[in-house]
Image (cartoon, rainbow, N blue to C red; front, side):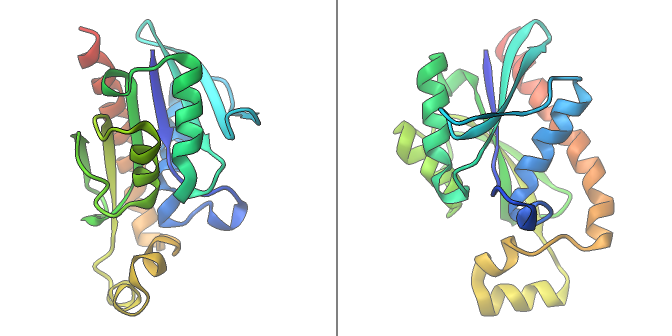
Length: 188
């Protein structure tokens, strides 16, 4: 079994922000794998889809707790389904230290200041899980100015530009390949 978590904020106003790239990737993953549409789980405070990929049961969630409390939803699901974070958890989120178009797959690393990831680490009591860090940093001067004057919060809540959106379809495809590779490598 695998738990795949896309990080983001609920609400239409956040749908296309940089911080919601995790939500968008799991939406794409569900669609690409013809999995059921997301359904609301009030008990676990998330949207959830479940299915089978490569003979492996997968649970895909989008926490609805807002980013900084994502760990509450993740912990609830992990406890309910008895998931081993070390082997069966994949967390997908934005990373402002990585350029747009880049993806880093890591395990056992700190949150690097990402409050959603830190919430998960705090709730689970471990950082030993797989992360897909999706680059959202922009070289555009206007975004560098936002970052300088408003910090990361100013950047992560901005929408992607049209040019950046054109890059994202490749990012979504590569992220889905990385998820499948992680699942396959865990279960040779």
